[in-house]
Length: 124
Image 1 (spheres, rainbow, N blue to C red):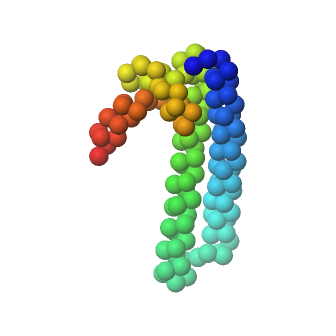
Image 2: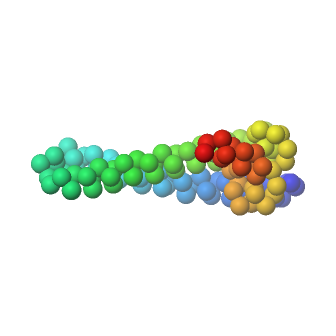
């Protein structure tokens, strides 16, 4: 990967990081306002069971989304650090170069396709 391509990927990663931070902030604000409304009694335990279930589901969904965004931010940060260290684009497992097409599609990828497939099979 040449310097121009690396600079483009770094720019893309920085833009992605900015977008993810905004999403994370928005999700956290939503969780905070939901928690505060719960404390003020706007949503209480005396509501109908279905309403409480819906509230719990939505809250868990938002927390899950927040955790997913946080994970993506960490992956983007690791990719940016690898660019600075000169190790970007190298598979964490086999140490072979990750194909440029994969990095363009998923700039924070840390595994080549072959190692990613092996990893996914292990979790099934």
